[in-house]
Length: 334
Ligand SMILES: C[S@@+](CC[C@H](N)C(=O)[O-])C[C@H]1O[C@@H](n2cnc3c(N)ncnc32)[C@H](O)[C@@H]1O
Image 1 (cartoon, rainbow, N blue to C red):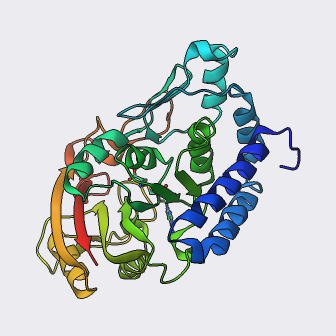
Image 2: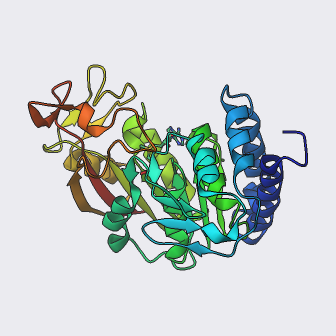
């Protein structure tokens, strides 16, 4: 990552510069240095990953041309086939070297990436129920590829920051952002615990698909509270089970083959947690059993997926015998 000729090096430096500029404008200025340090440390950490050189080469093999073509919507599109000297098979090969693609869908210079998850379906369930994002500063904790950051900008957010601990997702976000350098979407490769305390900076904080991965879910919710401005909104999407306010599932080991699942409360218990932590106007706006159409194996994610995590005799159960994945969306204010 030392050569200035390297597209990734160029991207990382340019993004740092743009992020610094945006942090000057936003009410997050007091935390600018910490966030910029987190950004740099995050990329330094990624550079030590065993697959880094392969990902870096793939990134370098993507079209070097600039493009003004950007289309937000269900499938996020950058560039068109005729805007680059790269062939479709060259672009496909570069993008395939960044597999597995788990969150999408995207299109890059004419090549469709059908990710494991239809992240657009989740957004369809979330978007009608949240406060309008127009001119809001938003944070997406565990943002994955950043798919939803683009949808938040589409909805009018003035600044959309994503944080995530997965190195490969940083490359997926970069694959789109390098062609939209002026967009106010940013990705910091860091976890929520590294965020400055008591920021009170964001109008909306999203936490989607992460609470059940946390060993201390109440601390996670309290951290979200501290990240929000007074009157700000939390959008929480997480796994739930049926039951009343005394019900919470802690799997004995794996849940749907995932090792890192800790607490799966009922909606009633989740609501109680939020009440006790001081959230207001708590609404459960959606409950949805995840379908094998929404999470599935594709050409871009060829490992196991939801169908392999369910009991083949009874798809209402996971392979371990727990209730199959069901997700709720809760919206609350501080
Ligand atoms: C199930 S995915 C959800 C992605 C996206 N939010 C969505 O709803 O489609 C969970 C994400 O949380 C990230 N993650 C796990 N622990 C995290 C932490 N402590 N801080 C930030 N992100 C984390 C993972 O890398 C992963 O990308």
